[in-house]
Every structure is written in C-alpha cells, then in structure tokens.
Image (cartoon, one colour):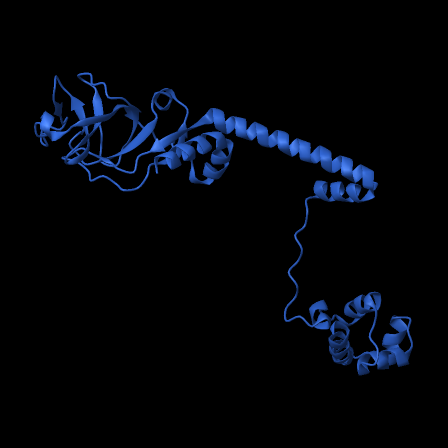
Length: 277
C-alpha cells in the first residue's frame, strides 16, 4: 500500500518541479546519470526512484522531502544530541555485543549508586510528619474534619525533630505570636505545663491556646477565651513547639522524589492508617 501511494505521489511531483525549474527530461537524466526513459517512467508512475535518487531529485529540483513522501507538512526535526553524547552513542555502536552488555551493566550500576546518594540526601534533609486535617482555631474552635490525617515532609531542624504533627492555625486570638494561616509544629502529649501553648480538643472544636494554672487563655486580650471546665471535655492533643518557617515544607516539585526516598516511613504510616480504619 505504501509503495502504491509513493508511486502515485512522486510522479506528478517530479514533473511539476522539473518543469518549474525549466529542466528537460534529458538534462535531468544526465544530472542523475540515468536515461531519459527512466525519468519518463518515474513521472508516469510506472516506476519510482530508489532512496539515493529521490534524495538527488530533491536537491536538484528543490523538492521538499515531505511532498515526495506525501505528508502535509515537513516532518519535525529530530532532537539533536549534544556532541559528547553523540560521540558516546557512536562508540557504543562500535562495541561487540559483549562490550555493549558490559557497558549497560556499568551504567545501570552507576545510576543505582547516584539514586542511592539522592535518596540518602533526601532522608537526611527531610522527615515525614503527619499533617492534621482539622485546623486549630485561635477563637472558640474549628469543627473536626472527617478526613484521615495525611503526611508531608519538612526540613530536618530542631523544631521538626521534636514534633510529630503539624497543625494549621485559623483565627486571630493568639496574635501576635500566631497569625491566621500559620502552621505549627506539635508534639503529641497529654501533659500540661503552665506557660506553654497547646492544641486542645473541646466540645466546641479544636483550639490553640496557652495554658495557665488550670485554665486556657488567648494571647490576644481583645479576643478572650471563655473559661472551660471539666464538663466541657477538654482534651490535650499536643504541645506547640514552634512555627514552620518559610522553606520548611518540601517544595511541590521535589515531593515525589522525597516520598520515594522515605518509602519505609510512608509504608509505616499507611500501615498505621489502615489498622485504624
């Protein structure tokens, strides 16, 4: 089928470009070291030129190669390899089958070694931390999310080393220390020490507050926190150990690579998650 289409296409194309160039069949045959009947057969579609002759025709008559091939537009140029890669590929083609196999084995080993180094870097640079779906209100309380906690990765530092969760802050009652939209590092604990800040679960929702001697309060005096009693079922979720700084969270473009490097941590997280569900 391809040859039939090729023959039908190339004959009229050769004739059109030959006449446009003002070249006779005889002169064209001489330039190709062929005979006039050969040109006649090509233009009539009885036969067609082989690839070397087709290339010469394109050069002599300025025929775009896509017109002979029957495509609507010129084919996209193949990407050019850098010079050093081209030399490497040329050298590879000269190797024996055994040499190629050996070189591929060495390349595979080098790639594995480089990937191991990248994974080690990501494990040393980041840690997996649980990202709580329910924010902590600096006001009365945030409604509890029905979603299961997810995970993300944060830079290894003194704050993240102590924490095992991150919680998002919503509201203004803990200003000027915590602002709406901040993310805080939280260490799970039920111990309460006066003067420290805590994430607490109450009947009204999750809050972030400072602990006094037997009570919780807001830092923003313009937004005081109502007194809470035993009947309010206040439960301490964890102690706030600090605020995430810009750049602590893993960049979105590196998340997959960091996740792959921490596959054991991810596996343990998922195992814990499914055991709870």
